[in-house]
Image (tube, rainbow, N blue to C red; front, side, top):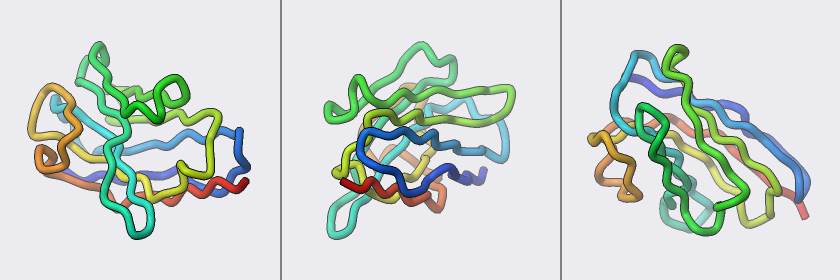
Length: 121
């Protein structure tokens, strides 16, 4: 399985972006988005179960970000609204080893190369 993220860019604070993660083949595993800012560790952002009924978010993005997936298109999305400068990071999508999404990076076995999101103040 290969993952390819896209949709990043430069946006002003308060703006929106939608990230996409194309998966090379169907997966029934949970999928998630993580992010990594310079000189910071990898941070969990949001995760979703195959059926879409189970989603989790880190507290700092709740109410602003929405994760979804289109299983017919093998694509996972992250809609990001009300962006803040502290959201600036490389965003990576990842496939879990599990069915249920979790926030622990070691429970993910496949990672995409990431897409840069920069939010200016």
